[in-house]
Image 1: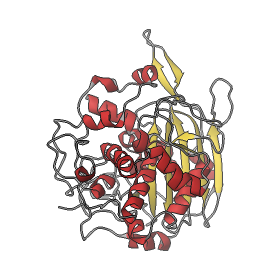
Image 2: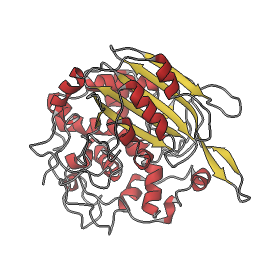
Image 3: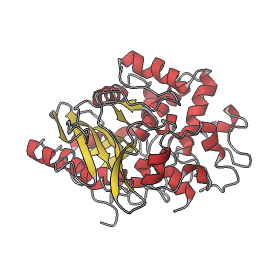
Image 4: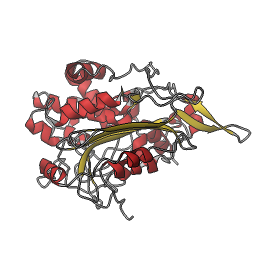
Length: 415
């Protein structure tokens, strides 16, 4: 494993774990892109009924060697269900709080994309203009023009960063010992210097956290305010999301109530033991550093899908998948994708084997794995959170169970 992969594991753990694959099924926005008319498919396909026994089984059997606790919240006019499993604190045996604060990882990208799309609606940003026009000197020299829209839908082709020992060796042991270590967004962006493009901008899609560090810097440059301020003034305060925020760079705390996050680490003598990593640096920032709760995420997704934050033109971008191949990506690996893109400007599209189409995002940080998905018509919404003990994606089977019980079975590509 090179250092790039190790860094990505901390910054975009959801991508490394391939969670998207298990929950589902020239220009950044080509004319043949898949538009939001796929909403009709999600409305027409019948949703499976909510089986409380199957849903509890999907998150059952905890704690174990892989996951300490889990919560699942399902809402929408097609039925409601919520449940927890396992423990939120290994020392006390306390259960998982049903509305725990969680580190939402890459679900933060949905907030970031929403703000950029708002700035486009305000004519302060042109989605088809090169980001270099707005951020001279921020991206390393020698990179070709990359549009703002290509950042948001991961068709930029930007390098995924360089090898560096600063981000550790990818092990639970390194993270447990260095969990308070922090990196600035510019430091992360600078890692692209001297690295080749992954592909010509606009010709393919590859999930890449670098895109959203740049998008966060863009927000701050255009508005003259911090990313945290923009999230607060544009989204969380108007919607009353009192438990959703961007932590300060030096604030490792996770408010209560919460489930503790643990990693199983190996000692020098070969024995293993859990290390509490609940407190950790929120350095992934606009790419993956936010904190929220299931209730707040449900309210945010509902308002977003109903068009509260974006006018129709920009709202459409949330449900438009570019018609390009998916290249070397941990996303878009279902049989329905067939090697094509599945990410939009902020969301991802997932189709189950029964034809149900859902939209949303996954996210992970060490000790925390979560997802927020809904049908386009909001008839079913799910928010889940797991507390994995490892960094190898072993919690994937629980996501598979949650997906099957909530929306129907999704077949991985080649499966």
